[in-house]
Image (cartoon, rainbow, N blue to C red; front, top):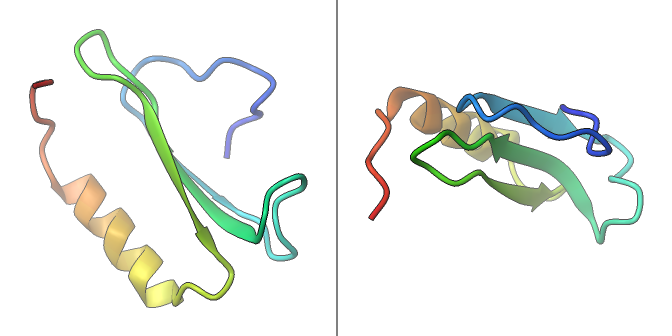
Length: 73
């Protein structure tokens, strides 16, 4: 996971953060998945709680990595 105090490089990389005891200052947030932006696509992130099954997280990340980039609408 990236240091959120620093800007994420805009190169389309996927970042995964896992906080086994919960992310500080976040409500029940245990997983954070972020994709940095590129010149043509905006960056985004999503989070999951500690109750989210690990299999779902693995499937989400696998699909994310396997899906080719799509042009911005």
